[in-house]
Image (cartoon, rainbow, N blue to C red):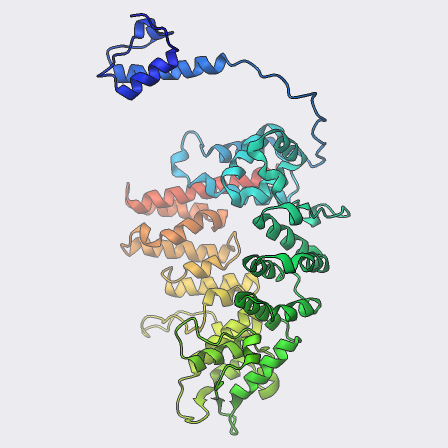
Length: 532
């Protein structure tokens, strides 16, 4: 049989029809003598692989589009140590070679590595930048750090390769990384929406006035959904200078924009909106004449002025309307109102009984009041109130007192924790885990900065050991285990290795602890290489 068509087309047709219906004409195909015709299916795949290499090797160069352009600008940053560069190559490929099966997903460690290297002002070798840009193309959460690390060479390469054009649309490096240089606002005027948000956020962090001026210039032409997220960006550097703009946004045609503007204004204790909310809150909550409890009189209606200040007429949560209005008013009032008007500390106020102004024996408003105060503490970043609402760090029960109960915290504990200083946040979470274990600790751990402090890391490892000894399965704590691979202090690797050795051989816990220990060792080496 004579083959007159292209060999690749012959293979393609045979693959479509099947080797049982159209046997391979191996004697007429290039390199066919290198395959075994006894297994037609395998031979087809081998010939396809050979043909692919042959076709690529035979590709002819295309004519140059024009004279070569200027070379990439020089990058003055020091280059990564050689060991750290090899580590980046491993992280980009996701393969560690021998022994890699005991490690976590390396892709989850890449963001930590990139952020650390960026903070140290180092640059990767030029040969690794294409792989870095490919990774950032596939994972948008890497782009900010990856583009910053790629530097001028990365931007130069992006001009040559359409696959990397996202680099040219990614927000310019943080102004703090290029002091004295003018800010280029082309992304604000020409970029995609996410790029515009990032540009505004970075600008607000270092020049709030310039960010507000930029937003004010295009505000009237922006879509409602865009205006909403642009307002969120004003949280960075928020100050009384933003009040006139936000006060005007209270009249926006979008109710979500109005609500967001009101929430931002409520974080400015001296704003006109905060004063209006304080008046409403004072009418809704007062200290009894005897000073022994708080009396609640919820708003009877939601008038036009309240609605303009961001309080929806109808509750979106299904709660009773008066309870909803009450909570919104108290959450938006300055927290300093309560100590100033009563002379009591947050702890003393929270200890008071709460009653209805009509029926003082009723305590139906107690939870509503505490929940509103919790939202206010988070919104206003008030550590004293957050500390009072969380209560003291849990302590083990006295001998013979039975099992400890989780502390009563109204509102989201993780959000209240995030208001506290990092060290105090970690200490409170460590105490909680020591007493109550990991069952309710996932969100609390997420509020703690990474890597976790040694005391918090020790508490987590101890709790994992207790979970393993109790007969629980690792996957019942999969969320926490996933976090430990990225956040546990690398110094705990030895303790985790001991747990792996103590666990039953070939058990799920043995494999889990071995994987975690390997990952911690990997992270320790990863960070040490940057100081070489």
